[in-house]
Amino acid sequence: MAHHRGRALILVDGDACPVKDEIYTIAYRHNMPVRLFAAGYLRHPDHPLITMTMAGDAFDAADDLIAATAAPGMVVITADIPLADRAIKAGAQVLTPRGEALTAANIGGKLATRDLLADLRGGLEGQGLGGPRPFSKSDRSAFAQALERVLRSLGA
Image (tube, rainbow, N blue to C red; front, side, top):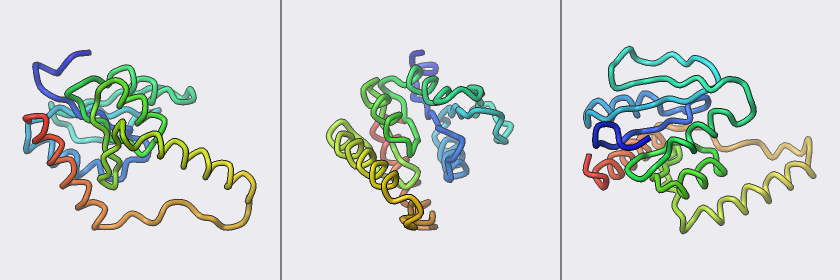
């Protein structure tokens, strides 16, 4: 799929995305279409810029659809490192919900770290390693600023 009427498109890995409201606010300001991808239906604003794609319950179905749609001029919002890698290879810009830009230059290290942490978690079951730190207001702000920067860089 090419640009939406010659413009960029924001693709959102929606199932666990904590910054959907920020994405909508910025999308409205830039008149930028947003496609949410999730296993099943997600509540979202009834707005012509916002569309929802339900991928079904197959493992990685939403990720596969996002990766197949990603292209230059698009922004993919995901915390999923393997999906980010696929989107980068497709030419899309990638941001995490905390506002970190994932790029061809840093994704390799992220994949290696993810694999190492998965191995550690597997070997340390029940050791209380915990998950990522709680999502904060400053994370929301960092994300909003990062998305604004990316959209400006795309000429939106």
